[in-house]
Image (cartoon, rainbow, N blue to C red; front, side, top):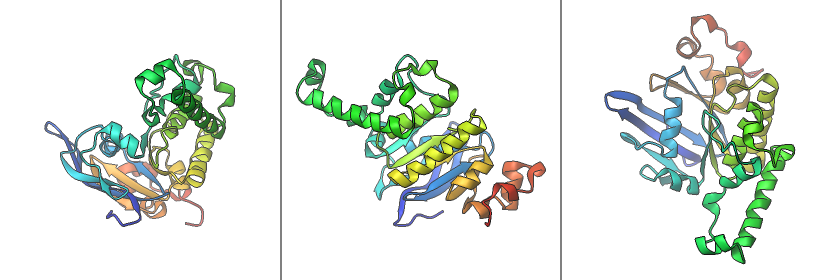
Length: 270
């Protein structure tokens, strides 16, 4: 997929090697501003590795990453967060002994400008900044309907709620590009429906662009604007969900011979 001026992200010819293992082999994907891209493929296809490449977890062997028109290929992870790239992880990477509110405040750490001295004494600008950030956290708590869990330790919450808290914390960093790594994994149908609702609300209320690693093909078909399929670190096909998910090569590689008919997974009317 070649980038355009309307793309918020272009990851071009991404190659990532670990010793003799080629994890990504010349993968190119571009995402328009405000779109949701589904990133699918078998286990070990390189989906999470691509998110790591985009977010700066690993230095690239070759290729370039451009975000909002700026080359960020050599920019470290913490600076990409400041530039507006947020991230969730496959596991629930939260502080289980901290409350939901405290975990979400961690997501705003990079936005805080108060120095160590004034922050430690907690007066003047430090107090005003703390109040402002807590107010913003409360807005996200309300958005994600987490009011009843606000003061509860994350470790005491159900897995599905923890997943939502993870997305909420990522949003507290104020990203314009949100990388979602299997946030629906392990959720029941009702929890998946809630997650889908929040994703669509994020897209329309905050104009957040998303790249979403997911194995639930039906969810991908219903929610995404674009789909990219990886296999063995290579891009198989990318484009509109209705085209990609009906492609014979995609059905063979991703879903296997037993799942040839994807009609039920593609949007009605597509």
